[in-house]
Image (tube, rainbow, N blue to C red; front, top):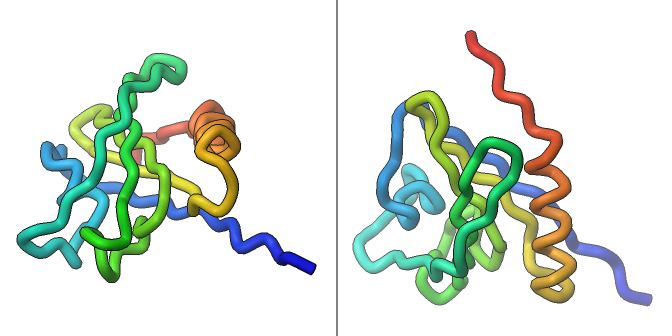
Length: 107
């Protein structure tokens, strides 16, 4: 019997983060980290970048082996992504489903 190891990671920065690798790895960023840019996704008013955080180049990151959506809005950068346990198609659908329900609220 196989158990589902799926989980979601969310991260936010109080300022814009231009580097996808720095956003994905957060404070654990180190030289040599890289993510694979898979394309752009439009969800509501946001244009998000879809990336894959290969475990080989993102060791220790909470987003390691995740398909992740990254976007900047109102001078903050956000990332959300599910662990890649099934197909990319299934994981993309999960990411987009959650992204459609995100509401950003001011402090």
